[in-house]
Amino acid sequence: MSNQVNEADKFLMQERTDSFDDYYRSDLTTLTRFLVYLGASVEDAQDIAQEAMMAVLKQWRHVDDPQAYARTAANGIFMRRLRKAKKERQAAKRAWIPEQHRSPFVSFAADAESVMQLLRTLPLEQREVMAWTIDGYTPSQIAEATNQNAATVRSHLRHARASLKKQFVRNRNTAREEE
Image (cartoon, rainbow, N blue to C red; front, side):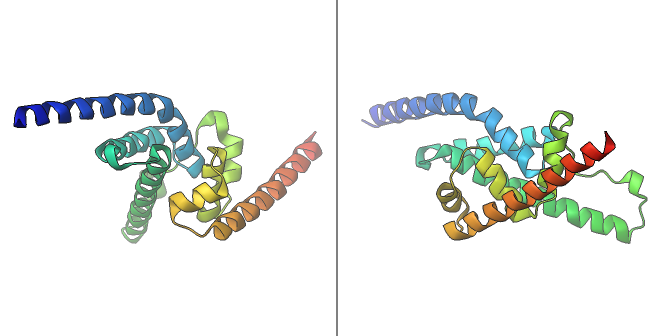
């Protein structure tokens, strides 16, 4: 009897793993892009996305919304890395290490430099909401996935959009003046 149960568990696990494989292939690129929107370099985004996918796989049987779970996990990993990098920068300043010897965590993809420059002007909370929004999530879905109040998410989104609009207009006017 226990052999039959083990075989059934293996079958169910295999079935669930196969659907994870499909999910993985369909969401890895968009998860990586989500992290780039948050401010990670392409290389760091790829690394964090892989780590987040491992977290999804470990909880696969219990996850109802793997995309939201992956983004929440990725966001947590990214934030931990940012905090660690900040601590390292502060320690480096105290140790009087010249700037050229410090390696910054966040760098931006060359092909999206202008968008990334605009996004990085935003406070972290607004940038996070914009990354989720750009990735196709509604404010209600973002609120649920990040354990925030939906009104707070909408407020961050409204402020982020207003700030980005001002920045865009300012950049466009500067470009016109230069012509």
